[in-house]
Image 1 (cartoon, rainbow, N blue to C red):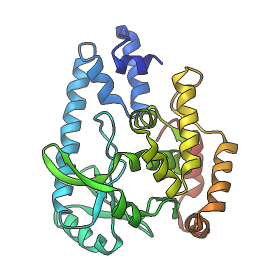
Image 2 (image 1 turned 90 degrees about the vertical axis):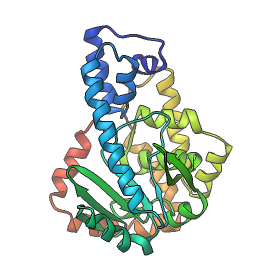
Image 3 (image 1 turned 180 degrees about the vertical axis):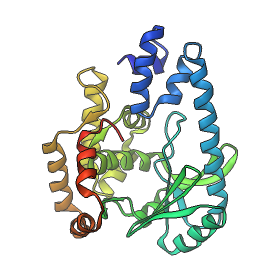
Length: 284
């Protein structure tokens, strides 16, 4: 609650408390917004984070220029507050993947992961994930092609024209990502929901069979707003299982690709360590 109130400008932490809330802001992907809210307290940290933000946006704009003319949309990119992400997620038509990869490689990127629905490229610490379908462990939880066709639009990013998912689509995707993939709700997810939740967002969630995930996200964010739980909030195993069962029942693509997890586990290196790390983590 103190972090949320600080972001809103209704609370000002003391010097010692500022560092505690700073760590919490990092876990909730709100570090830049938090530092801007208390700029005079952690000024040196703010300068470093602003530099990271400029670095991230320079790289993101270069990727946007490379993808010009292709069918793509920045995915999990639009947020109510500016932030520094760990990578740039791009939803792209599978027919355009070879051209996108070739263009990025020509700019110095290197392919480090190539999976059924994702290609990850890295250059000097900056990662780009090209998704043909929103997925995890080779399981598809939303129709990527349809999102591109029906729920992407032209936006302005630092004065440059780009394609991105609509705000209502971002709400639905944020819910699906938090519940089906990460099993964790961040305060950033709640800000997206509080700011952009609408009848249109609910319609998108229903159309893509992720309305159960959105209901859970809204419920959790209400608990957070009331100060009853802290973020990052790990969803209970039975909550995740219930969401999976309902997803399987109503989503044929999810049901069919669910079998891919067996291949994923077999082919993935150090799967035991990865699972243990996932169980122990506080955020993502």
